[in-house]
Every structure is written in C-alpha cells, then in structure tokens.
Length: 459
Image (tube, rainbow, N blue to C red; front, side, top):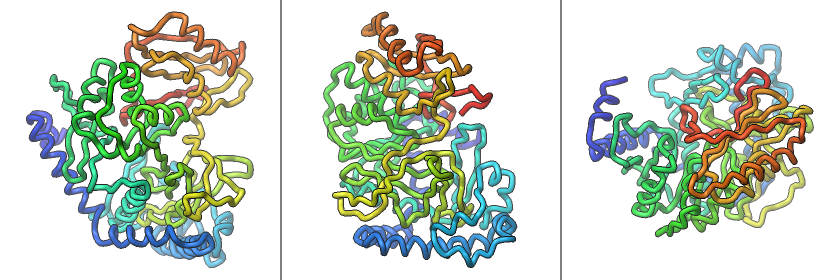
C-alpha cells in the first residue's frame, strides 16, 4: 500500500473527498484539453452527415490508422510482413489481415505499443477470464474517447461536468476499517458522487437511497447490476424518490430487458445503453429513441465468422496500443436491413449487445442459453429477490444462489423458480437452489449473474 493510500484510509471523510477531487482534476488534464473540445464540435457536425459521407470518412480513417500502426508497431509490422498493406482500401479488405486476440497482445505487448509509458494514459482490462491487459493511450486518443462518451450523453440532454451525476463503479474509495455508513465520496472535478459497489447490501442500501435523495443527481451511470440492486430495494420498500434524472447510462455489464424496465420504472427516466471497452474498442451508443447505433467515426466492427455474432474490432482511438481485427470476446447482433432510425442519425443499427460470448449456461444436451434468457427466468419472481447467481460446474447441473429479503420471501418461491429453469433447461438438468446471506462481487466490483466452469475455465 502506498503512502497516499495509507493517508487516505486514515483521513476523515471530508479530507477523503478532497483527495478524490484532486485526483479527478489530475485525470481531467488527460481528458479535457484542446483535442477534446475540437472533437466534440466535430462529432456534433458528424451527426448531420449522410451515411455515405460517414462511411467514406471511416474508410479514410481506416487506411490512415493501418498505415500508422505498421510504421510504428513492431508487432504489427511483423504480423503483416507478407501482406501488401496498400491493398487495404475498404472495410471489406480487412479480411485480408489476420485476427489478433488478447493473449497475442499480452505476450507481445512491448512490441505492440507505439509510445512510451511516460506521458501516456494507461487503461486496464477487467481480466474476468484471468487474462488482464494494460494498454497505453495517447492523450489525444483519450480526449477523443471522452468526447465521444460525452457527446452520446449530450444527445439526450445530459451535459457532463455541467450537471450532477451519480456513479456506481469499482473504485476502492471506502477504507476497510470505516464504521460510518457513508459509502460514497464526492469528485468535485466532474460534479460526480461516486458510490462504492462493494458495500451494496440489504442492510446498507437504505443509506445509498438517502444519499441519492439528498444529492439529487441529473444522471446515474456505472455498473448496471449495482443500479438494479438499488432500484430493486427502492421498489421493494416503496420509497419515494425526490429527483428524476435526465437519463441512466449503464457501463461494463450487459443489460437485461428486466433490469432496464426496473430502472426506468423506479427512476422514471430512460436508460441509454452503450458499448466500448477498457482496451479501447469503438463505440456503439443508444440514441434518444433507444436504438443502438455504431459510431462510425470511432472504428470498425466485423463479425468473426458468417452466422456468428462474435465481433472483431478495429479502433481509431488506439494509437498507443493499436487494435486491428481484435477478437475482444463480445457478441452483437447487427441489423442488416439498412433501415433508418427516426432519431435522424444515419448510422448502422445494432439489434442487441449480447455481451461476452461466454456469458451463457448449457443445457444437459449442450445447447447454450445466453445471459439475457437466463435473466428472464428471474423476472416473474415476486418482489422479494435481492440478487441471484447461476453457477454451472457440470453440464447437467446448475446451482442457483439466492440472496433474498427474508421478511418477504416465501418457500414456495423456490418451487416457482425451479419450474422456470426446468422449462428452459429440461429435466435432464439438476437444479439446486441455495439461499445465501450475500453473493459476493468480483474484485472489480462488478456482479456476475453467470459463472460457467464447464470447460474448466471461469468464463
């Protein structure tokens, strides 16, 4: 533990808020400079372009980015040594290039990066598969990414750093020996109240809700499941909220239909989904009509194989650690009908962000049930379920851990849930329900609905 971490843990909360704000102002230096404001203005104009103009811009950016990468990254120069890069003139030409995965980048990271750590902005992947990765961004790329994110929110009425936001994330802001029921710290640099995702228990949630009612944020963002936990508590206890946000902007975790409906019902505002990644994937964002659009200025998405929803990404904001045809491990369902959205933005539409390709459970016969369908199995449960997790260690057995409100939960609800699962997985699958006091989160602070160990790998 560093000196500053020790100092933080031993300081009173008012001083911890000051330290969080100072850290926020330091991060702002890498996020909100000249490039940020210029790119923000560009994106506002880019929204008015025709689809043809946007695709041509994307094509030119692709050519420039590949040329830059080959000239500056030893890894890619060697990877493409037998390929005439000048033949890559369109998005379809990307198929001539080999696919890159996380393990390839991790093993060769010193040759992949094009800049030194000094002056670079670091990004860290979550490492949920056990393979973490540290990437380097140029300050210009980081500013462009922040501009893209802020422009997405501004489209639906939220002005970052001008309006208040509440964020649920995996920052370790609460000292381990703290006794006071105050699980949030204030970052004045962004008008942001940061809420710890590690302390959201049934006992503590009332304090979170009291803080939200006092703070009255204009937007809520961060971990989807943490926000759903809070919303579920508010609904179960029929608590009146004293604010209505402009919107809710989940990150890091795949949305479920039931979770979206819960958030919108409780907070009386729309949820706007987005997709990016800590290693620098291009963006997919939801418009005011809640339709997902590919942000063509940010990069290229491809499907890994025909009739396969797994994606490959090429990102124009990864000059420090280039990503070209990167197998990121996520899945999307593209809309190939070329229909136009009523929001007026001309850009390809994504039907669904399906999240990590391995977020699924098996039936005993080997069929895959994805996370969205697993989440739907809990949606008809009476309003006494706090949190649930499905664990599969064997292909013919699923363990369901339940964290419930003991004052409301009835034993017959187990039978209701077991019946839901049997209808989806069949009688060949053994369903075991376990009631636990608390379902722990990952080290990152995220909550995992599914833990699948069937193939000997935590996915």
